[in-house]
Figure (cartoon, rainbow over the protein chains, first blue to last red):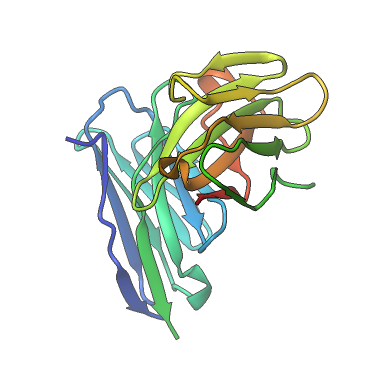
Length: 110
Length: 116
């Protein structure tokens, strides 16, 4: 079993839709959870990070963590074509080694 | 405030040659991490460096790969005698804090290495 599982998609939605992206993990030591956005042929861009169960909101983005289920989500409200990218979840215990999911490719259609 | 800079952005090497990838962290960041992204794979941790010190190289292949972060200048990831399997995107990240607080990592644009 991989430490982090992420559905690769692709996921295609119309503009304005609410997008839900998810990752599951198996390592109970993971305490910090990050979401990155990666445009084609670019480096990952840190969107949000959180370290507690519950929700964290930043503009149109909401990160949700459920440690009891080992499940994290990223919600994007009012999705825009500019949100089209690959979304990577990443997590770590109490150190610096980030463990990444393979990414979900999202396309938002105008 | 400039982000993490990497060069070259694209690098083509023949089998057996050496590849040198450079990374300049964000201003004020003294912790550097290298990750590799193979086709159809997620990013994998390779090495963590501070100025003049390798803190953790547990993700580095045992042979042909080395990394440094000198007192002056950028961090360098060096791959000797490259093979086709080294073809990948190599990303550098930096953070303002280290050890247990370094989950806040900011990535550069990457160097795409192609071995022919």
